[in-house]
Amino acid sequence: MHARFVPLPDKRSAHATHETAKVLRDRPTEWAHVDTHPNSNRASNQAHRIRTGKLAAFRPAGAFEATIRNDHEETFDVYARYIGPTATP
Image 1: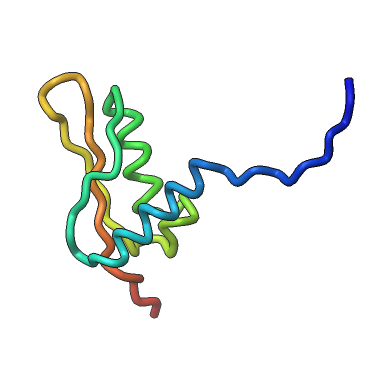
Image 2: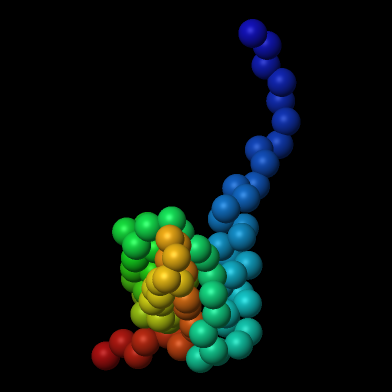
């Protein structure tokens, strides 16, 4: 075993997620296809994480809407749009 000191690579999935959120912010209120999953559970989970801001790129919670659609084959598509931050009382 040996130690090799190198910079830690960026997380690729996080970069893609932030890029997706940026593109949605650039076109507010327009729905966009953001991902495809093999089952409804995974697609619903991702849509929930977008809506609630569990994914850091989609914060604050409520700034994005997300939903899923079945393409009538064997996959489920996730759609999202930026609607802006929600007002706080």
